[in-house]
Image 1 (cartoon, rainbow, N blue to C red):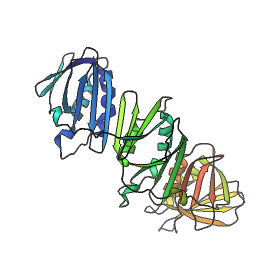
Image 2 (cartoon, one colour):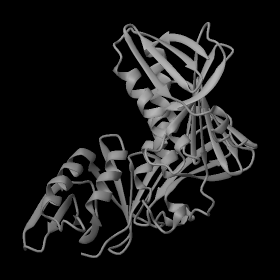
Image 3 (cartoon, one colour):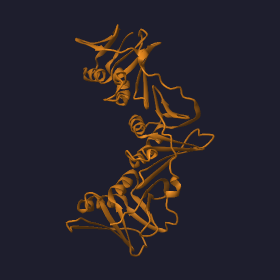
Image 4 (cartoon, helix red, strand yellow):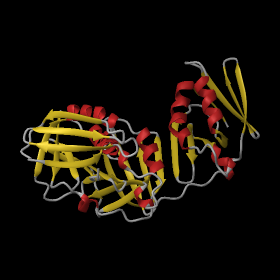
Length: 366
């Protein structure tokens, strides 16, 4: 195997795949990247057996071959080379020689034959949509995923494809985030798949806000996402996600219309004097006014008052301020709508005039 290409051309696919590599693994070869050169195409593959990433780039004049190379060392070397450098890679036995200008490096390789083979994906549905749309719904929901919950199906993001609509849903049992977008070609049959936390984080890191299309290939146990020069695949969590639509409060007839930035600023100030462990605040409503009240064990108190368009009279509900702040950060627009039912029910937050992004925060007793 032999190839020569500009540093920038090699660095981009390396940056895309290197984070998949586990820093600590019981299998030494999983600390390596699989390098394959075929028909003047360089393919770099990284996997932790749960998530796999394959990035490709053109390598004109390259000689075919394959090996595995220490991922972090190789990436750090290429990243540290000067801009505009030309990198030459030559495989000699079980050593990869890397040269650029006057710099020479030799890396110990492991056989490509020992690299874990990727599972063949039996595609049952294909969905096409704009890359920016998938990134948007993941950004608006993924923060609500659980972390290391015994209910393993909550430690991921639900992708619910129903006809020409794709919904991303996340919950940790205390809050719920739902965002939806239209797809260009949808599923023939409704599909619900749970993408594990690492898969969500890696995919979200790769997605860009451009106009390009991406394709979701849905298998029985895997999801593959394809775009130009990149293929990402992840195992799916085998479990049943809760009925998220049942969590969205019905009959929430008490409306509050408030400036999003003002509410966010009030919460950030009030939470300074809240209980550090629970970060609870009380939202109090009266006609035309909303108050954010916080207390702590030292008997300190914060009261923030702001204008709000509401006819609610004498309602007070406690919430975790962090959850409300996360929801406000995922919404856009100058004003948000809070929908409540009574002092013991959850609050539904959404943008004014747009219900595609909805956040539900459960109440807490203060």
